[in-house]
Image (cartoon, rainbow, N blue to C red; front, side, top):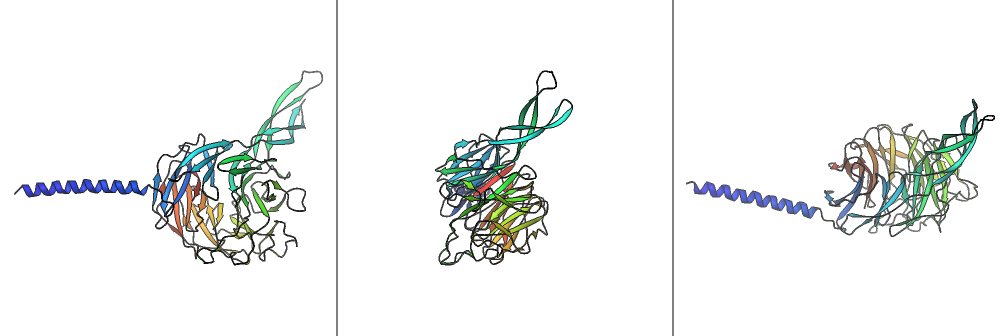
Length: 457
């Protein structure tokens, strides 16, 4: 009578063990990357100085960690992929840019790093000489501090927005017949834009870089930038996926770059040389021009249809919208006859963030229909619809993120959006309804501590 229950227990044990083996097998299989059915998302984590790789199902979003994240040999922050998704570029220690190859298995391998050229400065500094404060001329060079990066749509050039910094300079003076006195003064150094050519993971800084801006009220602090497209979103499976993809629409022939200056409340405007990628003033201008924003612009994004530019104003809690003078029918009536890439405020701009606080990074979906704004002080993403005619924004329903969201990216198929949450050590994942722009939240993914940059393929 006791044989049967013992056999039953033994059978149950074997069944449970086989179930564990099967589960382990399925988990192992889940960590494999298949480019035809899976996406990739990369997270630069400052807590352990690595770039983690995750693979996720394009069908249901189920996400798994890929093993062996490469060490970055520095503290990573901003991160982007080239348009082909073959290389990732990561800012390290806020003073260099490293390249990582995206391997066929979905993981990354570290490549070379480049330190951007220093920037020259020439200004005056207050010095107390013989009991009297005087302004002394000082000059020199100082390292730049990249904050964010963007590539052009062709994947040939990479641009980094550099924040303002300080430099130490020495001033020597004499008082009467006393020996010469040398003092060290701290000098503000304005932000700039570093520009590089990129090819097969090789990063080469171009001649003339970094590119500065004209003197403003305060030393410029460039915190983000955006580059206009040179191609328009295409039809997918014969279906019009973008408001600008009507047959017969011509791709832009000129390329422009816009940089947000958070201390002077400006957006600086540049033209991109199509043959070299160098930055120049706009046509008929001797130096870069600018346009006013709200208080503390913190993010800038260009519509992929080359019609509109949007800037998040953190302290004003709003989004400023502009029409690009690109020659398209959608451009402002205030634009000059000859397209020059200058910006004109949209009617009814700025647009208020009514349910969020601290708008920071922002992205336009790949087909130019929706704008997503990361509300950094209220831990959420606010979606907006974009009017294809006027560029006006209409707010949708916000979706929650983790604590202190810091960076955001959207996949090129317009189906997935990811946010890194610095304080909660998580990655927020959202599926997008392409027809409405609505975000549907999936369970958060645990990352290494202090995740910062994020990129998706």
